[in-house]
Length: 386
Image (cartoon, rainbow, N blue to C red; front, top):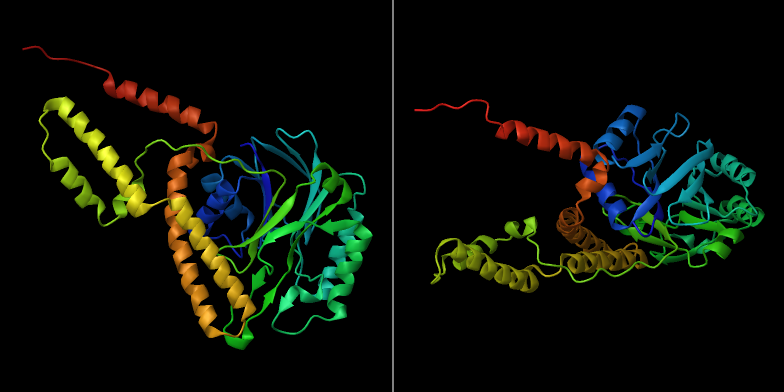
C-alpha cells in the first residue's frame, strides 16, 4: 500500500455481515490505513468476532469507555497506533505510518447530542492541544461551526456556535480543505421535514499543515448510513496501468453470457484435439473482451458514474429539501448505486485478492496445510497385482 489514508465514518451500527462487508470494501477501495467507526453499537465480544472474521489483517482498539460508540481500526502491516487518552466522546492516538518519516497525533471525535453534553468534549480537546506536534482531528462532532451548516429545521443560533467556535480558536486548529458534499448528515424525512446538517468535520493544527500541506478531507454519501464518510488524504493516488485479460465471475450473471459462450464454442474448427480446444479458448477470449467492452463496460466507471448521479441527486434534494420529486430521484439513484456497488466490489475482490489481504501471514499456514493435505491424498498406501 503506497498511500495510507485516514477515515472516520458514523456507520450507525455494523452488527450485520452486509454492513461489515461494505465497510471492509470501503477501506480497501479508499486505501484506509487507520480510521474510526462511530456508533458501531457493538459490544466487546461482537467486536472481536467481527475483527476475526472480516478484518484479520487489522488491529483495533475499544474499551468500556467508548464501547459501542468509537472503534479505532488500523492495518497492522502499515500503521502503528498507540492510544494516549480517551473519553466517552474522543479517542486520542499517536500514529506512525510505514514509509512516512513524520509521526503525528489523531483525535477521533464522536460528540454527544446536546450542547450541555458536549461541553466536556471541548474541555477534553483543549487538554489535548498540541501546538508543536502535528495534530489531526476528525469525526462526528454533532456540532455546527457556521450559520450555513444547516438547511431545514430550526435556524442556527449564536448559542449553537459559541462553544464550538471558542474551542477552535483556543485550540489553534483550522478546518481542512474539503471536497465532496457540503452537508454531511440528513434525517431523510420527506417534504418540509427534511433537514441537512454539516456536523462531521476535519481539523488540523499549523504544524500538521506545514508538514502535510496537501492534506484534504473528502466527504461522500454512502448507501448504508445517513452520514457522509470522511477520508483524509495527503497524497495523490496513482493511475492503474493496462489491465490484462482475466475472466470475472460477475460476467456469468449477465443474461446474454451463456448464449454468447455456447455460440462461440459450438462454432466448428478445422483443428481437433487439444490444439482445437486451445484455439476455441483463444477465440472465446477475444469474444469475451468485446462482450465486456460493449455490454458490461468498465464496472469501475459505471460505479463512479452511479455514485456521481447519487451525489448529484442528494445535492439536488438538499437544494430543494421539501420537494418530493427530488427525494424520489434520490431514492432511485441510491438503489442504482447499491447495485453498481455490488458488482464493482465483486470485481475488486477478485482483482486484488482481498481474501489474501484479509488473512495476511495466515496464508502461509494455509498454503503448507494444503500441500500436506494433497501429499496425503496422492500417497499410495497399497497396491494390488493380478
